[in-house]
Length: 250
Ligand code: GLN
Picture: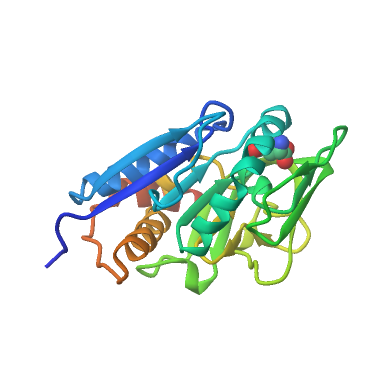
């Protein structure tokens, strides 16, 4: 029997500034996959000048963006960093895409602009490379980053930033096709506690329903203090889209 009267709250960080390549599709997926299971879900937009109530949220989402928008968001995140560290330390789930991902590390050094300080939740740093990585990505998830057995992660990358992981911040996946974090160490994304960063736009979650459910289950565990089984959904369409990319010959 599945638990009833469940609730999840999402903080969507700076959606007016960091939301390129359809990253809002990740919010739509989380909302729908909760609604289809009668899990109450609310989404608050956190915009410039807003103060985050870190006790309120189970999931934090931040999308990708160009260097210019990252400059604006970086200074906002600096003001919220203690709250966001508290959230991460209380096992809140973060999903950060590309530009947003870079700002959860220690810094992002763009090509021809001042270094942007990140908030250092992820022990990682990013420097702009000479080449832009653009294209489809397939990767194999590390075992503790997925549920119900699916091992692959698919998406689309478009970044010049090269991200390097350190310490207890580990990759979420190993690259099969594409570049991922930096095009050399075959890592994609980052995880520390329940904080996930990835270069995969697309948007990521519609074509990776297993990863979306993984994040939902972590958020429910954070809120209710126990593992909660998720009702299975008919993911025929989602998995057809997923497998079309896994099986694509590049
Ligand atoms: N501006 C950053 C880069 O080029 C992030 C880009 C993005 O979010 N897609 O690496």
